[in-house]
Each structure stands twice: as C-alpha cells, then as structure tokens.
Length: 293
Image 1 (cartoon, one colour):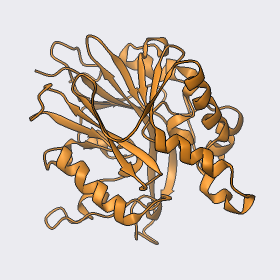
Image 2: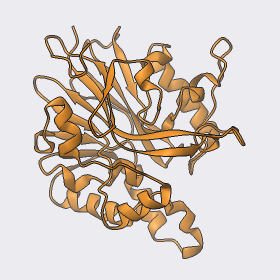
Image 3: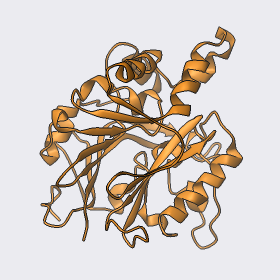
C-alpha cells in the first residue's frame, strides 16, 4: 500500500556543470548536465512540494544567469504535466535556502512552508557580515531570506528545530547540521506508513548531487564522497550521507537526489514539450501514471 505518488519535476538546467562541483575531488573530469527540479508528493489529503525552485526574475534571475541556467519554466507550466496547479500546493518543505531551492516562495500562494530554524537564522547571520565574507552568500538571494521571514509574520512558516517525525503522515524531516548549509534537511517518505517501513524513499536536497556521493564511483566497494560545494564540514557531510543510506534501508536506489541527471535511467520518465524531464518515482495506490508506464 503506497500513500504518496512521487514525481521529480525538472524546471530548468545547467547544460555543463563541472563535475568537481558535484563530487568532491573530481577535478579535471569534465562537465555534466545539472537539472534544477523540485519533488512533488501527492496523496488523498496532501499536495506537497519538496523545495520550490526559483523565480526567474530580479536577483533570482541574476543568480541563475551567472550560474548558466537555461530553459527555466514557471510552475504552472511544469506542474501541468502531472495535472497539478501551483495554487493546489498545500505545503512546501524547504531543504535549504539556496536560490534554486527557496527562490519560488511567492509562486505558491496557498502553501505553508517548513524550514529548519538553524537554516534561516544562520542565513540572517551571514547577511549581517562585512562584505569580505560575501562568498558565504554566493548561492543565496537575500530577498528570499526576507520573504521567508515575512511568511513567518503571515502565519505561513513552520520553523523546525532538529528532526521531526510525521510532519505529514509517513513523512519525517531529518536535520543535517553544518553540511551543505548550516541547517540543511532531508526528507524520509515511509510510503507504506509503517515505522519499520519496507517502502521508504529519501529526498536529499543538495546533500547528494550524484550517486557517486553515495558509492564513490565504485559500487562494488562503496565509500562516501561529499559534494563539491558547501559551507559546512565535509566530515559532517560524509556522516549525513551514511544516515541517508540508512534511512533508505541501506538501498541507495531509494535515495533521490533531484539534481541527478541520470534519474530517468532509474525511473519511468518522459520529456515534456519544453524539453524537461518528468520523473515518476512512485505511484500511490490507484493513481494514474503521467509518463505512460
């Protein structure tokens, strides 16, 4: 019995991203595509996003252009591929506050947002520093941080402190402190609703970019390799990678990194007429496929 349908929806991408930015130590190993996407979970009761992308306007567009992002499409275009409207999103879990994960706050007008308190407070701290420390803000839009605070004022923000079980039925949040960012979190979906789940999935945010982060490129003799970009401890990152695999019952095939360009090789998928991937990770009982399984 599966409670949630799970889709990873590509909304833009970087055609050529240095591999060393994604897998630590992969210097001079060339480039790969880096998809930008969010994950949509749909049950009978909830329509949930994990991260909300960015708005291709104002400073969000500057950051995207500087990063080489192309083919950005708005949520109403992306989500129409699975029959969902942005107004139908009830809740958004923010894994971390980089612009491509939290820049779309205003695009989901009826949603409540969930973020780790440490993530938000440390970005406010970073904003307060002297210009000499501006590298810390390289991938963040200060406007997004301000908009997040405004959500709190408007009663639409839930500030999480550490791990939280059953934030929605069968969905747990796990803090990975001082890793990719100060308060990154990942999402565990126990899709059979059981505490000792036999159908668990883990949505990683940017704690994992590619499967090499989980097996080092040698699946027969695996080892953890942290991502190439982050502001926290690489040791903490490696420990978090282990916890992520454990949360997936030791099966890294049930770990879903939305930035992984090879997800369509693992799951049913199709290209939209905009040239973006719709990846169908799981279907709730009785739910129809949108990729023609």
